[in-house]
Length: 115
Length: 112
Image (tube, rainbow over all chains, first blue to last red; front, side, top):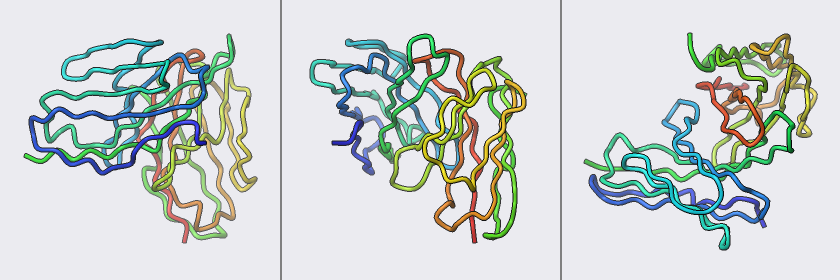
């Protein structure tokens, strides 16, 4: 079983739709969860960063973590064409006081929002 | 300059060439990373440097040779690469464990 599973898409939606992006993971030791957005020909940029279970909202974006199910979600409300990108989930495996973070990534989901 | 800067953005090289990728971070971070991104695969961690010391090397072939002369600069030296090494090479930096990484825009490498 792969450590982080993510549907690669593409996911095509019309402008204004609510988008749900998801990842499942197998390592119960993960405590922090990240979503990165990557535009074509660019590096990934951090979108959301959450700790443990629950919801976190930032504008049109909501990150949700369910540690009991090992399932995380990113919701995008009122999606815009500018949201068209690949969305990567990631979880860090840093050793305590190691000073660095080893991220395990999903493959990424490509999102296409049409006008 | 802010964030993480990578040069060159695009590189085409033959299998017998020697080239280097450069990364510079302006964030005061203590750790720097090289990742490889290939189509339809998750990002693959190649190397980690923490406080200028290499702390991880994920079974990367010796034709890839990293160098970290100081906490702000990271290089990836390339020699006798194979066509399957064609990919986007991403540099990143971070401050502490379990914290997000800040990525550069990447260097797109094509090996002929």
